[in-house]
Image (cartoon, rainbow over all chains, first blue to last red):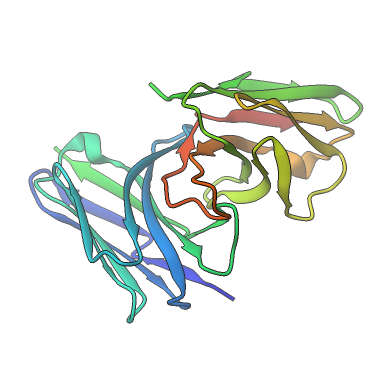
Length: 114
Length: 117
């Protein structure tokens, strides 16, 4: 059974510091991995999707890496801002699951203090 | 602004009521999803529709009844819910490319906050 873990559960950093968020998964047979952001009381916003054949994806201040063999992905957010405060979730799509059945980690709650 | 629109944003209902949640997207996506999210927990998949047909039912109780009337709309009909069904209900959609899996990201709506009295 695939298990997706995110450590730490919560993180507080001062504005301007780089954020490093970790996601690990037990079954390396994944199709892709997606990072989301969720603001309180809101839905999920897709940040980055990494295909299993890729090592990293970048979008602006965001960079996500994927090491499928070790079952790890890391989301880097450069020069954090108070507006980056949110919960960040990773989700994997296994090769044995069909039709986009994502398995989510529990998330990392991030607070960026001014 | 999200490209997946869910209505209503909030819903309070009694255990004997019948209500429906609605979801709409105009991105041409052919896969649509219902998720349930409890406080401080990740979303849990309930149903998946692909090409307007039910593809996945994650053993959801029959008091939840999904419907996909066309490629842009997804409904969730609610009847005789229990207090433990109170949660945020999220709709999502993604492109399909003719295979059983989508390598495209899922796009979520802002959800319906459901409270059962």
